[in-house]
Amino acid sequence: MHDIPLTPTGLVRLDAATTAVALYACDPDPDVVRGMLAAAAAVAAGHGWKTAADGTVSDDCLLTQAPRTRPGWERVRGIAEERRIHLVVVPAYGHIGFTLDECLAEQRFLHRHGVSVATVEPMLDAFLAGAAR
Image (cartoon, rainbow, N blue to C red):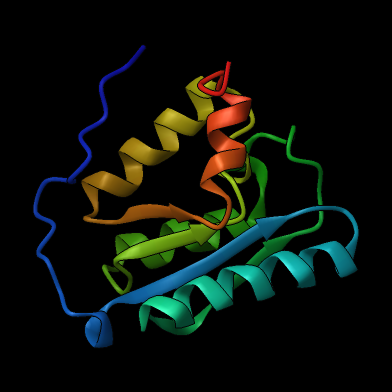
């Protein structure tokens, strides 16, 4: 398993009011995407984080589609490269990349740009990763 630092290099602790986030979800059903983005927005609001301008992003595809082929995810990457966000809030890590290698590669990219990931459902991620066994 690849080693990913829990605190990305260059990440400076900010107070909640100055923490900018992007919200991201992907699913072929627009109603499902709306619900997932609403849940992500609720998590962000609950922490006092502010959604960046044009920071609510989605793709209408299956999770199995490679992240680099998704226009919405490419937009999130662009926002991260511009250093306009500190966090990406997703429903679950599978929205970043369906396979472990894809997910880790995307997280490494984000971390290189000082961006962390927060999930709406951390227990679901732990279960899918086998940690709940």
